[in-house]
Image (cartoon, rainbow, N blue to C red):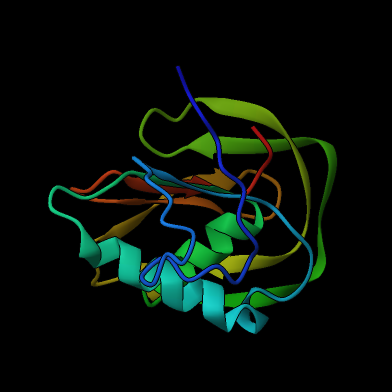
Amino acid sequence: RVQVTVVPFDYDLQLNPANIQYEGIFLSNGPGDPQDCRETISSIRWALTAFTPPKPIFGICLGNQLLALACGARTYKMTYGNRGMNQPCVDLRTTRCYITAQNHGYAVDASSLDGSQWRSLFLNANDLSNEGIIHCSKPFFSVQFHP
């Protein structure tokens, strides 16, 4: 059985004022520039190192960008963005291509992952932008598209 508890974007995971007991974190989609979500990025950064063993973290869309910023990567505003129901994304582990739904104007700068414990997970086959990241050894990953 799964129970999902929704918290505001600026909920402080470290202080956890509602004393929520959780086994994982889901970072959802949303609008705007991910760099404007300072409180959220700080909270995610804390969660990345706070638990032994680590609690799983999964993000989609804005959640992908927030996870990237929390791990020290960069994001950028795209010229046009990726929008629509037919964006091809390549799984870099298998080279399998998925047709995905997307609506975003920001992306993760894949080169900012170099030298870290993070790797690109998916690549947009149209514009070669990053479509997801994954940690090399911990249960942290995210995708830019809407699964």
